[in-house]
Image (cartoon, rainbow over all chains, first blue to last red; front, side, top):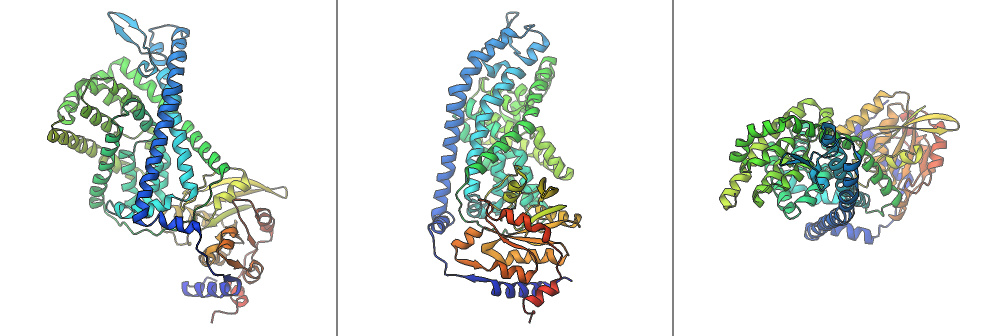
Length: 412
Length: 175
């Protein structure tokens, strides 16, 4: 037999009266801290401080300490010269794909002198994966795990709720958004906590387009550190503008959210270690193979002249519509497969700061990586097609808008 | 035997799961960490038991996709036993879900989890009496430190389907 709603609650009431006694509740320090971080007046400054702290630790640990301080020296000083010598057949096709694409200087094949410009799977590919992306992912997930286990995320969700309602989402959308900053794949999975199809579609689309993953941020931090703030600002603005538009045009409901704000808890070291370890393993087994594959495919396409051809073909669009130099066309085409290295390639091209910002923003809002693509397909092919349509529109509309802003500011 | 871990979001189901199976399911202190189910194996008295970590759900009337997954999982495995994890400091609404599962005829064991938090909040629960009224095993637990987990597992075999009429009678009627 099953009960009706009323009957069930009556029964529960009875049971609880017979078995539970509620003592006097004492306001604890935890509660006081809890309130301070949720009330807007004190909560917003605290949130800004926490995010700023997050950001500075990320930059100094991943960028300055690990990448520049250790891996650049290791890879450029030892690994690159060694493998350039040890690998047979200098200048061969296989050599150029795996080790060093090199350059042609007055008819002679010359070797690259750093791992960023070699563009081989075993040099640039490995360096980017281990030297740049790994430290970024480790520190990101470590700090995220701390925030998660302490119980800060739901409080951040409450604080940002009003703002996210404007784009058809609610505070809890902060969870997939922040997860995506590590890797978009778990971010897409986390959209399941949103209630309606409309919300999940908006969230997935915005994640795929506007949220750069840890790998991309790590690379940007490495090659264009001074412009990173501007790039992220443009992405954030785009997130809200296009979220607002999507909310207006996508049919469906965007309900209020109800959330249990859990008490703050002391994080357990074991759990943090396990979680960070699991996520890093996930990144290396799910995402990295695609990255290496992409690196190899791009090298092949370069050698076959496909990228050059497409670049020349599309250069007028890039130059006239987006306002970036014609030389960027190649890297921007390659970015469909290889976002992170594309940023590295862009960084060595002569252009103004504003053009650089535009070009890097374009790379970020491009096609999601193959792993994210597969994850979105798993959530539904209709959603995926919709997201791709939105993507094409956004790349042109937002890229053009950034160009226009540049013209109006007189910097483009 | 197949055992499902069910309960509200953020009550510690994944913590139980990891402790019981030695697996690595992500645990966090926010509702909605688990959005898909994970299966694992544990041994009880020499028998292999399949344990499923089910996404959190407030009731058997799903409100989002993660809850859809949870309810579908329950309905697909008619022969399963269910460990219903309840936040002991919010016992009433946990009982709501537990009753729904009991009413559908599943053998249930109740874990009164976060016993330490309830204790700090000066909430005292007479677990024995609760067990007597419901007719299903009730075990106080603190999953994060592992307290009560052994007992919970040892009580699984005594879980049987219960008629809700009996619960009503034990509670002294509905009126």
